[in-house]
Picture 1 (cartoon, one colour):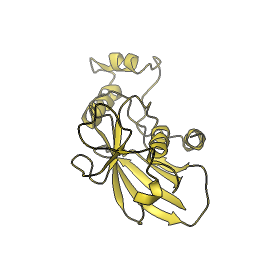
Picture 2 (cartoon, rainbow, N blue to C red):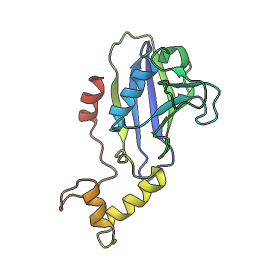
Picture 3 (cartoon, rainbow, N blue to C red):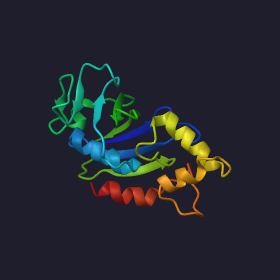
Picture 4 (cartoon, one colour):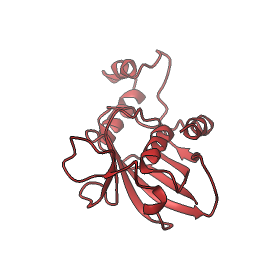
Length: 185
């Protein structure tokens, strides 16, 4: 079985940031986590979880840690196809509990196709940089980077490691490059 999932960052607009990926049903949720990291361009620096409703869900799928404050189902032992079973089913992925990057996952298609690799088949928008303060921090960052007269404009470019003549493009998304890194997971 092969699932097509649309994964969109919540609370990010203008432009929205989303990826459409295909994943084999036999992938573990840990492997799905790694695919999402690559598809969005995250650096895998922070904790994460999958759940039905996000925070406050009864069942949390994650990598168990000594810091867990509630019972966690081991993401290495749960297959994606055992949980995501219905077209239009919704699920949540949270990355970085400080910045709270909430990703809305929607099952778009389930095919009776054998596959061993994930793929990214579409997407839009530049993924926010790590540790920029969540959706609200990213919106503020985009405003500063779009305005060369902003007193923090140069400081933000330096923080991001941008060249002097380089500009931040929130619409940038390279499907071919993303396909390469996702297929490598």
